[in-house]
Image (cartoon, rainbow, N blue to C red):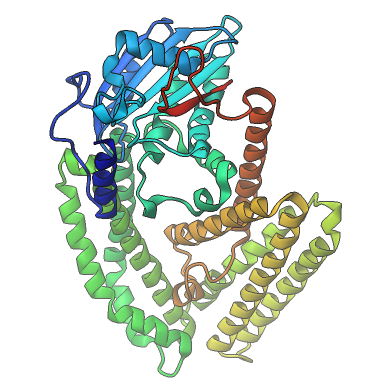
Amino acid sequence: MRVAARLMFATAVIGGLTFLPSVAMGAPAVALPYGDNVDSVTIDDTAGILNEQKIRDVLGDMDFHAPTKVAFYSREGEYSDNINTETLQYAREKHPEWISSDPEDYGDYWADHYFIITLSVQSDGHGQIGTYFGEDRKVSDGLMESMHEAGYDDFRQARWTDGVLAVAQRGADVMNRPWYQQPALWWTGGIGGTAAAATAGGVAIARSNRRTKFADEFAAGRRHLAQVSTDLDETEISARTLPNGSRHAAELERRFADFIEQYRKAFSDQQELEVADKKVRSSPDGVARTKSFRKAAEELDFTDDAIIQAAALYTRSATWEDAWRAQTAPLLDDLGALTSLTSGGNSSIEAETAALKSFGQEAEGKVQKISTDLQTQAIDVDTALDGLAELRKELTQRLDAFATAQINAFAKSESEKSEMRSKMREARYEYSANSRRRGSGSILDVTLPSDFFWRVQAYSVGYSSGRSAVESDRAAAARASSSSGGISHGYSGGGGSFSGSGGSSRF
């Protein structure tokens, strides 16, 4: 029957469904408003170190991918304890429902749907953390280790409740996770990738946090849409004055062709979100809707700014010089930021650092020349914009080369290089998308893909993130090597033939 249950669950995951057992097994569920798929909660705090109410409150905001019975067991222990066996013996005495009653299992496995967390604390403040799983909830050793690592920092500061909640949250994140939610680093990076993910996981992505996120995204979208409404007449007039035959103006005209329809849809979405009930505001779908609304509104705001600035440039109106400064601002900001990016560099990449500095100085001069030529009408607007585009494209290429040099200088393996490149790509995309919130009026940033150019601030954030992730992985590996030696399996000294999934580690 255990095999059949696993097959049913696999079918449900592949079909994008949630498998709900028709009959609750084991201990009855506590009648509290737990998060999605939390079937029941058991807290046996025999060490007297856990805050039961806090655990129940946080579990009210914790979502699992499949119906799960969560059990917490704390105990006073010694270094020599095998807490795998201690947990098994405690279950046999106090919670036989934790052990499978399926005749085919012969009592050798944990019961399906169970996720058991054991915290064993020693008198010196050190201890062990164990996680145990029904066969339909088991995970790889790498993911199990990431669960334990999620709680290490709290455990080492005697924050026992926060630690077990961090372990529980990490378990909720990864147990039975659909394949399409699994990060590439988990597929290829093993323990190193999961350690970084565990750090980022944190405790309890709560419903209350979703409501806060809903409110923040909605407020931001509403501000953008209000600005679009205010500028609507000016945007329409500006779009009509864009010249024929201009490459950049033609792309802005194409954008404006869909502008009014998108504006009406965004206004309709705002009205629906305004009256959304608490359930919608607390749901992932509700947050996703507000995020889509915000992105649509800021895209409209960003686009109308560019259209208005373009009209000023092409018609050479009284504000054309301000409009041109809006075009040069992104590049000049990036060139100015190169000073801090290239200061205090690694001696092993001196040549690459010097080349990037030299380009920055040359590019500033070229921007000045383009601006002067445009002012004297030695060149037209399209030629000036093309000149800016080429400089920003060349800066992106130079940053690519500098990134390769920095990564090669810091990373010690191909997996570390891959992780750093991944973090830098994420930051590049996120910054490009988020920069639209500031609405600079840059024509190039509207007519070209949002991450076509690599902004220097995004580079700095991405490199810092990648380096931190690698350092975190190295620290986790060092801890595992010096203290726990990874996951300890087995139920020796009283476990008999028990083969339930799970294991423990030291902190």
